[in-house]
Image (cartoon, rainbow, N blue to C red; front, side, top):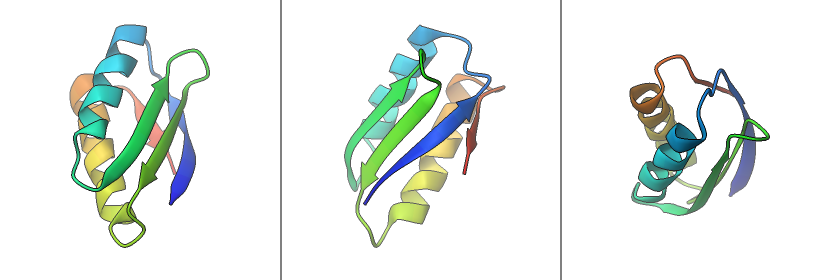
Length: 72
């Protein structure tokens, strides 16, 4: 399943790259991209575990950039 999410308060391109790299390492993620320019995240992950993987991605984003939120 592939879904797009809007990001709020992503302040730095380097942080976006760190988030993308960490999210790609989550078990079950096929691909992920975090764009600082468009303030969007695209997540392609296993259908059965998508919600679980999304929650993990939310935690990663909060750790890298505490002010950043994924608008679901």
